[in-house]
Amino acid sequence: MEHFLVRETWDWLSDEKRVRKGSYWLQACNGYRVRPGATAQYLHRYAPSPCSLAEALLKKDFAERYSDSINSDSVNLVGGFVAGTDVTARNGGTNIIPGSHLWPIDRIPRPEEAVAAQLKKGDGVFWLSTIFHGAGANVCQPGEPDAERMMYGYFGTIDTLRQPDLQILSVPPEVVLKMPEIVLRMVVS
Ligand SMILES: O=C(O)CCC(=O)C(=O)O
Image (cartoon, rainbow, N blue to C red; front, side, top):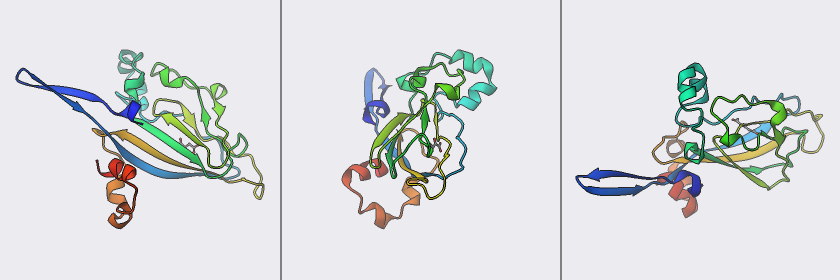
C-alpha cells in the first residue's frame, strides 16, 4: 500500500522548500458474497485520478487530454482481498484484465480480455484502483461446495482524499481501541 499511496509533496515558505511525506488511510472494509445465479458484474475501475471514468466519458475532450495519464501516480486506492471460501471461475471469481492499469483512460474493457482470479480459501489478492475488474457470474447449483463465493476486502486510500464510507465514524471507539497498532495507524492517522 505504502508504495502506491504515500506521496511526497512540497510547498514554499518564502525560499524554503517544505517537503511533506503523506500517508494512507483505511478507506473501507467489505464482505463480497456472490450467490448461485448471480450474473457477472460489469468491468470497472475505482475512479482513476484525475477524474472518474464516467466523467471522462461524458467530457470527451477531457478524456483526450488525459488519455495517457494512467500510471502509478493515478492510483488513489489499493484493495486487498482474502478469500473466505475457495474462489473459482464457476462461483464468481473476480474477472481481472491484466495490464489494464496502464491503459489510456478511455479504452473500453472487453469481457474476453479478463481472467478469473481463482483462490483457495485464505489466499489473498491485491489490485490497484486503475485495474479493470468485476465479480464473475456464479453458475454453481445451490448446495454445491463453495456455491456461495465469499471474499473480504479492505482498501487503503491516499491521506489527502476522504473515504465515502467514513470508517472512523462507522466503527465504534471500543472496537477501534482493540485493533492492532498497524490497523490503528491506518484508521486514525
Ligand atoms: O466481488 C468482487 O469480486 C468484486 C467486487 C467489486 O469490484 C465491486 O463491488 O466494486
